[in-house]
Image 1 (tube, rainbow, N blue to C red):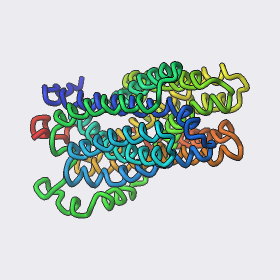
Image 2 (tube, rainbow, N blue to C red):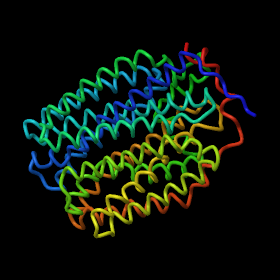
Image 3 (spheres, rainbow, N blue to C red):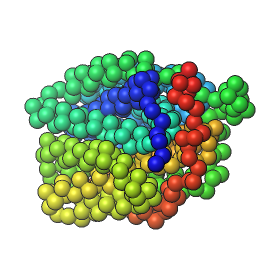
Image 4 (tube, rainbow, N blue to C red):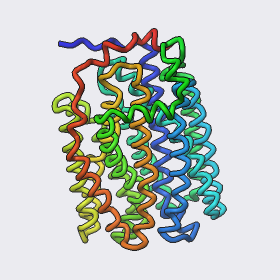
Length: 417
């Protein structure tokens, strides 16, 4: 029997810090998503115009995602997480002000700041989580992303309740900003310095001087990584589409109330959380390729029912399948990207796949708003269905390498210096 490395106090605190702030990011994201119908009504814009507002989140997020890997390689994960936290809090406060003042430009700008902070922080978090995973020799990323999903459950419940009592969106998001700031202070202090940093002392000086973007582009010469990237594109698009559009999909596509739309998003978030926290044993028993293939097919069934069913109740129930199926795609693909070839290029591979995933998660779904103006939101979701079917065909790329990443990782003590 393989003996896993023991977890010392500093590694335990490191892991807990990552879990806490991912929970906070999930709460903030779901708080925004659950209130999108109220914001849309306050701004008095069409679905297509709301898609333009949502592009603020996409633009900011991609800016953060594209520079995050390089910044982590140069400075380590902790300062990048700190910068991301500052932008997240600032973005929430600007969104709150824009919503209160009914200014589309203010909401757009706040979403851009929020997205930039999320992009910076979450790529750094995936690099940190992959490092903890290699150190411990057991899955960490599914639970880390499960904390994000748990946060979305909390945020969705909060949003649903506040929507029902017509609590002002601005005050709601301002309160969330304060909570995120408090979580960020503890997290930044608990995360060790230097994770993911590459410099001359570590033998990676030439790679570090080459810049993060060049390093991320270079790793795509690996055909397996390209296939992993395509899988994460599809799975993250499926998750992001629900995060961006599910409440409005139920309100506009199935004629439910705004409160029912928030409830449906909460069901999706619960399903995502359940899948991520329960996925570890399935991954150990069946392996990532089989698990992600089954996940893509389950998600496809859920999306198909939402799109083609005429029953709002049945569509709402099918959202559970959508969430369960989409739950493991992102963390499992990121984990597969970081394994099997030694630790030297691990941060570049993880950053590259994370960037691809976040591109699909954040940039792709808002574009559905333009398609929805012509065919409706339900029909626009057929794009998600097609991508999930394609992902199910190439999951063989996720089969584990024979090399063990645990043996190649420094001890927790030396890695935390």
